[in-house]
Length: 210
Image (cartoon, rainbow, N blue to C red; front, side, top):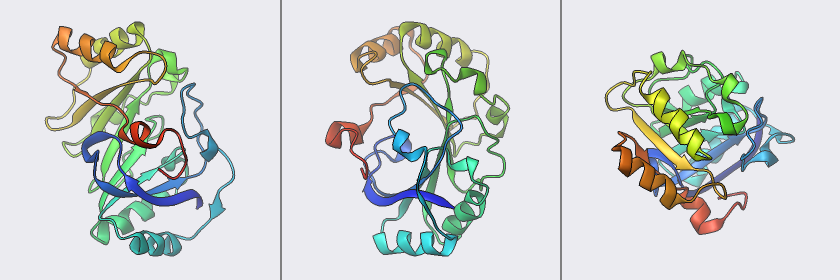
């Protein structure tokens, strides 16, 4: 597998935000969302075997592990890697752009699935049948870039069925709308979602390794 970096930090997003977490960032992504903050993971990386990855995760010592990218599901060997991490007792989350099938991913892991909005430039790539595969353990995420994006995402929420317990996140795209704007819209509409900001960016900006 091609790996861009393995490091320990605080999880900045989703249900495990604020927890110490080891990140396994895989290299490569078939999408090009205009707001991507990990473009350095599109190319390069180092080839590593699953055993070597597991050894590094063990050495870092965190209970929570996030498999991310790039797009981790673009590398087929990520499926056995996730299963191995779950077998070893780690609390695993998998961050995916939502354009690839999630059904092969071990359901012991929390699958954090993006729905790409029109302003991302990649909404045509959304794999809507992933919604049917979600469990109460999984999470759904919308990155909102504008009022039009918000209204689009709000409309989609009225069309899909999300399992009870599956958290739906709305997050502002940095530099495009303010956190307060998005928060005000959510409150005004009494929208049944959770608002989030990227904790790691508040602490460390866009620096790799955090």
